[in-house]
Each structure stands twice: as structure tokens, then as C-alpha cells.
Length: 103
Image (cartoon, rainbow, N blue to C red; front, side):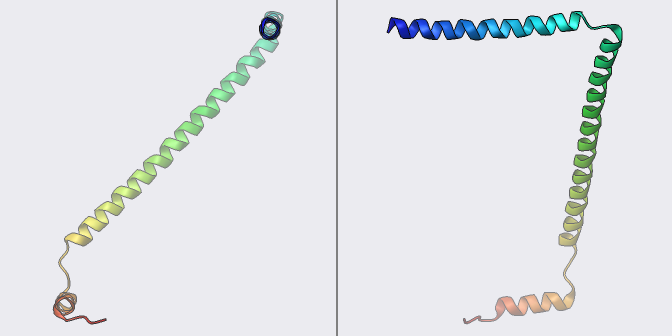
């Protein structure tokens, strides 16, 4: 059991060393960047942020259009349901309701 625990601990330490090394490497690469590279990095980040903003605005516009269409549909059906039935249709409906239906 002790050997198994030591092996697990050794693997965990190895993973930690690799992660710390990768973090230090990224930090060193960033420190060694020149002004042009930093400007390009900032530009890439700004472009990505702008794409996210445009996508978000487009999504909001789609949602607003869908909500407006739904409101129009509800208003249409509310108006249609509130209107009285035409006389002939009302008569036919009454006849059907009073008729003895046998299947």
C-alpha cells in the first residue's frame, strides 16, 4: 500500500512540475515580447471582443424580433377570438350542438 501511495504522490508532483513549468514559460514569453508583438496581441483580443459584442447584439435583435412577432400573433388571435361569429356560422354551430350525433 505504501508503494502505491508513493507512486501516486510522485505522479502528482510530476504533473505539478509540468504545469508550473508551462506557466513560467508563458510568463517568460510574454515578458520577452516586443512592443509590436504586444500590439498584435492586444489587437487580436480587441477583435475577438468585438466579434462577441456583434454576436451578442445580433442575438438580442433576433430575440426582439421573435418577441415582436409573438406579440403580433397574440394580438391577432385575441382580436379574432373577441369578434362575434358571423350569423350563418353561428346558426350552423347551434345546429351541430343540438343535433344528435350517432357514430
